[in-house]
Image (tube, rainbow, N blue to C red; front, side):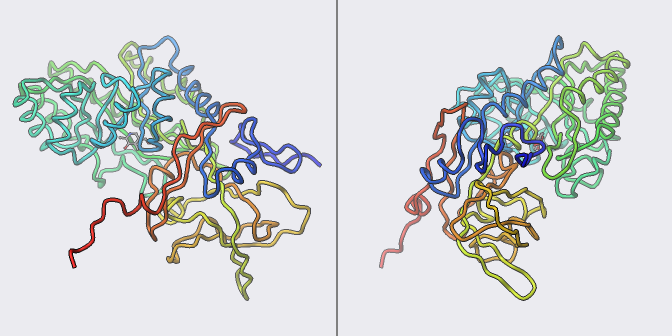
Length: 426
Ligand SMILES: *Cc1c(COP(=O)(O)O)cnc(C)c1O
């Protein structure tokens, strides 16, 4: 019998009956470190990054990892070490970059709701650029920069009004969406910015959505942005860098996104044809750098057969893996050791007291209580979105490099969960 293949997950494979990530048997990690447990492949992260680096070879380009996908310090350290910059969306994320030894000059600050305190801290730290998302934010940033005696580099996030053809909650490039400045307001916003003494116009940016699996929406966005650059520069305002955001999808379940290098060969063809190939280029990939590098290991607690449905209750839940509850997202679920038994169909659910606490519906599994499972594609938007709901301590995280295992986050204790709470003085 051929070992089952896991498409899109080249760093995870069965050897005999056992599932390995790089050179490590995952069942050994689960028994040593407990479950739920996140395990990441360093080689998978580096391979994902090098696909982008190949795509931009010979170009003036900066890859800014959109760290909200997975903001664990060691992951940031790994990317910083490879020359990555960072796309941040909060003051907390800036502190993480600094704590991980990232270079603040490579940081770009996105997000619709930056506070004055966050702006001031980012200016003092010397970040590379603010991606401004509204005209009101231009004025506030101008005030903060003038008060600090500084000039803030800005790029305006323009909403190119293209349909990324993805889930409505992760589509960000359409008109009626809270992100960015509408395409038809962009030239006026740049004229306004150019007249503010606390700001220096540096570039333009867009980000059209997430889990995008075709090149078409990107090609549309490139054309819409380059049209605008021509219109803005016709007003005498120079646009030094072009930032095309992130959003490239991964293979969760038979999705076939373009490879990062192939996508960029196509986009750079368009950018070159329009005469912008020598500009400084920036991108903000998140999910595609880390998503398929990670798995979440979980143990089967109970099998609960029913009249219409069988439930497989596991020890990971929506607080660890929020994507199914939030977006009806699909994660593959596979056993750490295959069994030569007939499979049954289960809803895989966690212990949290919510009907939305499910991890997979109608999955065919040959399992018994005590068995270990791997939830795949758990490297992005899982740990970084995790919570303590139901007073569940957050899982531990490991980074695997060949046969070496690094603990990059210790498992929380229940005492950690209520450390900052105070009792009343009865
Ligand atoms: C979330 C986000 C990204 C990254 O999106 P992915 O789909 O994870 O690649 C990039 N830029 C901005 C502004 C974002 O908010």
